[in-house]
Length: 532
Image 1 (cartoon, one colour):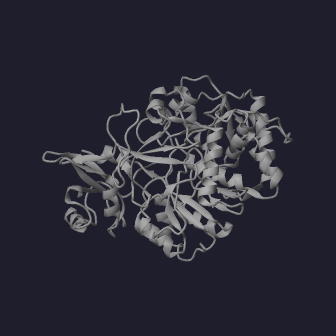
Image 2 (spheres, rainbow, N blue to C red):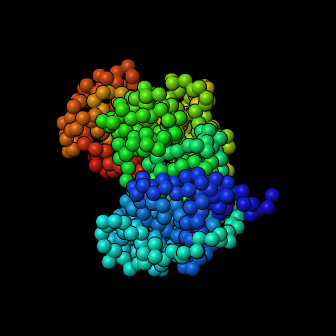
Image 3 (cartoon, helix red, strand yellow):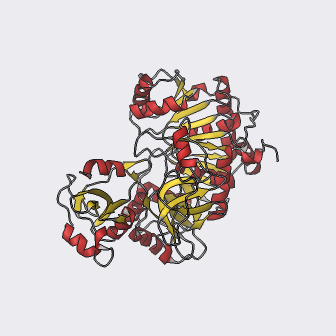
């Protein structure tokens, strides 16, 4: 097979999908109510590709975008596929110094900015050590002035010609997306996602989850995150499904979209799933069209899963990361509810193993016995193999052909994988390993607990002990002070559920957990505030 095989790169996707299903709706913008067929999406991609080429964006160049989820970001995805250039969506949630570092790293030829983030980007560019890129801004009604950003309106810069363009022929191993990691510790790393990786993740998702041409999903992840592209968006476009986007989502909006658009599949972080189940409209919302829902980005509490099961929705947990996939596991057909804490079994084209945590110099660490906890490693044709301009981190994560996830896991006797937390989150108390995820799962079963993070704090007797930081199920103070649950009550609740050395010895309360990335709990911020 030729090295430049079109079935293994993204460039032809929009025009091929338009040729096969021109009248199917591929995208719905819930913010404006606009709906786009695949034929329209391809014509828009052609105009955008012409824009890139007239601005001198070549096959080795990068287009960066700082924006919420908008149709123009979708146009850039398909257009960079056509031109063979790279798309780097950057988080609009970053502070200017953080954004400056990423701009230095991706070094864009063209930078597209949604107007609410003009001031942030302007400040970042002042501090970035990068050649000034061509700037375009995406106008937003009611947005602040873009006087701080010397740029051209994106809409006026687009050529009128939407006829087919000549499509580049990148190699499957060439980079299409530059996606940064969550960045809860330090500046995010930029992962190079190749054309082959995008295609293979899509195939893995379709085969593992049984996606169909008539599937519809509300896309609740931001498009600067792998969840915004590779969890469902690109796989559904592969199948001619429909993706619903919006500038902002709240739980009520997601419920409305599921009912109004006949949503069939949903993937969201646990916090969103919990807020949906707690919403006033939850009991009356018609969820009958949902074939399944997936929780990702952290452990989903059993009480949340039961709320969805009670509504007849097949909710299970998934697992992925920017560096690999992100879709790696699936629940087998007819999976038993007692396996709900697991992420299932490896997808069709994913190898998974659990290896001993120890000497980092061991190039081939031994696998652990079934039931034992170790580090999860993954191997797949959808895996990345490098970070952008970071050889040290690349060697640490991708060095031996397996992706070292940094997550602790175990495999049960039936072959189901369970995520036990991060290797860096594990702590030792009195000589015993404590895995915070296990402790958090037990604490979360208490009716007074909404969210919980367990962190290690110093202790003169045991070296380290656990401290439970709790977001109550009902409002409480935000100063770490009194809450609806005492430490003695919590430890009594945990008796018989966890070994006593795993019990937290301190407790603190927050009104709302800090978040990073797509509504994931920011453990680093919790540690900074409560780690003593």
